[in-house]
Image (cartoon, rainbow, N blue to C red; front, side, top):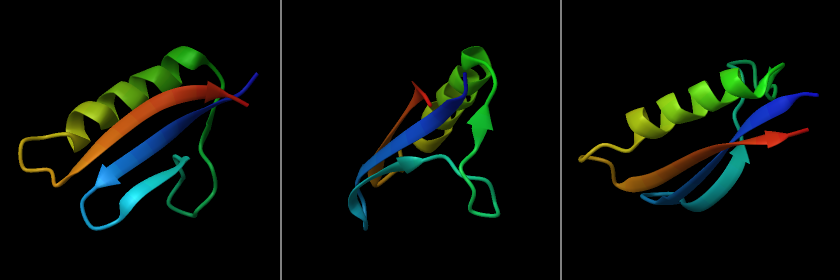
Length: 64
């Protein structure tokens, strides 16, 4: 099984968007185990949602 981290952004300049987490090269980033993907999702959620954010970010893991 493979896992991806999904992101939902609402507010800010972009409005509402949802997509998979991607590498710098634009390819979808896949994880071998759910725990690693969840750790990345948790880290991104805490880093992206700070008191100066104009948008709300939600990251979660999906199986692919």
